[in-house]
Length: 411
Image (cartoon, rainbow, N blue to C red; front, top):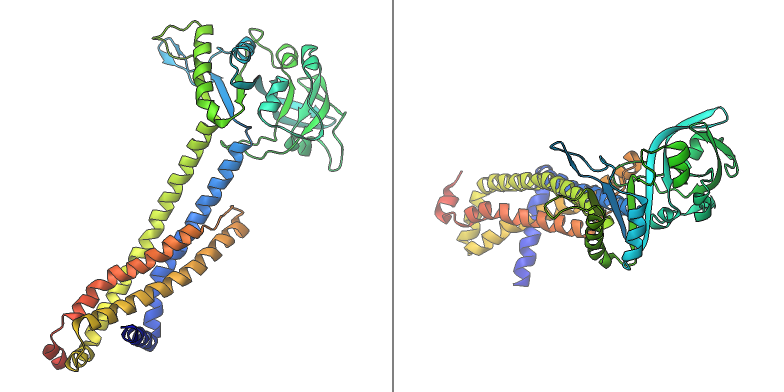
């Protein structure tokens, strides 16, 4: 049996070598298909990795609480479209819920910041000191402001790297320098470590943090003291997030005196929820790209079937001679299947090479991150072999069913 298989494979290689150009052209569809699958999945995996790192940059086990959605005059407002959250809400949550490690709050507005003859429009956030701990924000130099500085409405600021790049000359140390926000002078006491883009594409380093009390009384302003743009909370463990969310919802509904039939006047999002939405989008894109690339494999399979059908016609007399001297139906069947599988395997191996090269080139040229997936390589290669087997079955079966006498008479 082993000698039969060896001779079958050897014969297949000899025939394919005899028609090199035809063999190469036949494998192009498989090469493109396998290469496209590997390249597309690599891009998708790279995008997923970026999303995961962006979500991780938001903090550890974070819960985001936004004001809204509310119904006003029959119109349902969006998240952040109403003033329904206060500093007291955050303090009460921390006091009543042992599952929460921290609670914090923030208020945001985009303003022009001036340093010397330079100016820059930047989101200015009035925050509690606990906000920085919830978001896991570290510093390249300097440090955060304290609770005492917030209570004293101190004019101190923490700035992100993008702000540094746009306000200060290269090599200049911003620490201790004075900037003006809405004509109010602030001293820079900390330079925030870079975080990069957020999951929604915003530059997290284009930011200035000032004490919340200073923001609402001297810079951003407010209709009612103590109202916030968002609340933040964190837990010790990721597993505690669902319990914490339900407890937060219950307490906020009680504090806001909402009746059972009334909807929440706030919106809760966890870091896990945000990550799932972003990863789900990335996975959908990967599946779509994988599906499109797989079409090339099917086209390659049709090419193999077409060439083998031509080959059956060309080799009809040869098949008749082999049958006349004792070759059985399964021998002819295996012969043509071997040729189909060899073509698909060759195309698959070349496709793997081109796919990896394409992924690397994408990273080098476009700057997109890519992760080569061993699983994608194996799946694409095995799929290419399966395509060769499936599409080679019909011409192989047709060849094996030829009548030896009719085949010998064929011209």
